[in-house]
Image 1 (cartoon, rainbow, N blue to C red):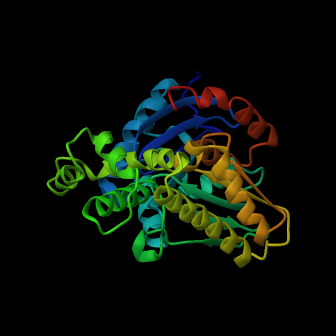
Image 2 (image 1 turned 45 degrees about the vertical axis):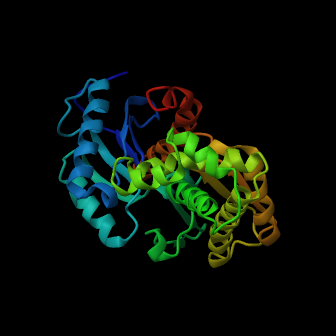
Image 3 (image 1 turned 90 degrees about the horizontal axis):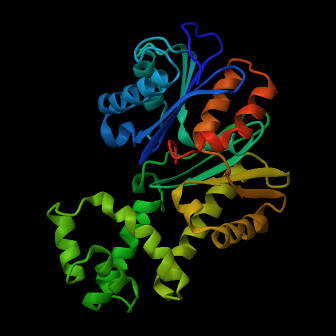
Length: 338
């Protein structure tokens, strides 16, 4: 790592998700000067003040790695892409809050799905669908037009994300137990997952707060395991997710008039990356039925690299800087960043 007092050409990149937050400090050549990972920093979950507290601690750690003071000016530009920056009012509140931290002379704030899109493309043009703790999609046309969804949960029409899928798995398990639904292997699998006598104990634990609601997210991998073993109920939920991800992508492609053009569809988030090729192949098949020239693929660098690339774009860095950052992403994606 290198350090110094000047900020010329430095970019502070932030990818803040619902479950984790990554920070990179890079120079204008794409070299990583400092990095840090911490808990989720979504202002919708934590509130703006608590979100800024998380980010301040992580920026301080990255700055210290770079040999810089942990507080004050560390970069020319901050590129912050956060879950929970869904509406213009939220983006502006975050921009004002981050600018007030004094980390850089300029600050741009956007939704974290934009960072995923840039991470998976050479120019930030295309469609990106993220399915992690939540689900979201954004599309950017070559002429700059943007299509996006509010992504505020059920009130804005959303379906999917790890927490939602875990809740669906539990819903089916409970109904299998009490007779309102079909038998499903989700029932014994969930009971075993929590190590409790019965599904009613799981429900009571969630109701009384003895099991945190965040534990539902942990049922998402279990859902896919049970589905892969042939359980029709679990498989039905996975089918619904494939449909939803494909729908998000193709609606964005349609709204941006990209159905008949070669275009990248970037897929990311812990749910998608955790289930592997079979799910991605099914999503690609559905997308191709509507947009034959679309090219769906799973992102191969951490989304925080996309945030850094957007920051490098903003300061006018050379294409070589992107190449440098991408070719060294194995170091960026080391255990420090997961």
